[in-house]
Length: 267
Image 1: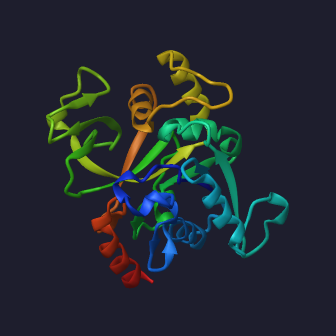
Image 2: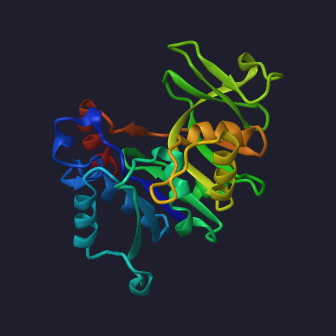
């Protein structure tokens, strides 16, 4: 299984640190976030990752090239090394769905690939998560019983994705008018998901159906959750509940101290 690390974001909630650094290189326990994520994936048996870059892209590339355990050419890949393939979004930040479609050439043919946000730290057992993926799944989302205001909605029996809701605003969306949101199981998304390599082709279908603006060079912008709602109305998209999931979104300054405590506890 391959991985894709979402590392292109602006990190505006981490200012002033991200005035001079991309979010991916914000340090936690003297190592950048991207290193914590990559080493976790590598320890889980994943030795190939696609990394999208946009904000301070040159600095991310400099970090990649400075790591003796990371290679950027498949010819250099060997035991003890991890391959990073760079999906360049310098021209346009493509959001999460557009990022996957733009990286299509790196992802198709791998069977499955795991997506991991660069600012997420967790105790997720990646091997266990992969073992829970159903044969017919186009996408499988790691979810948990966690306090939040934004939930994904699932069929309580099959855990098939059927919508989302925001408890602050009262907004919600379901994939079919027959679905009663009150009867669904509401779970929090972790930012970790496993996709079939058939998904990029379906994203192309989504872009055509929605008549989204397409730039043959820069790509097409769209959020992956909007795509998931479209996909889930047609194809199986499932949730996998991780019990006892420890999860930190290192997207804000006040999360840095808990993140350091988490790393020390789990190192």
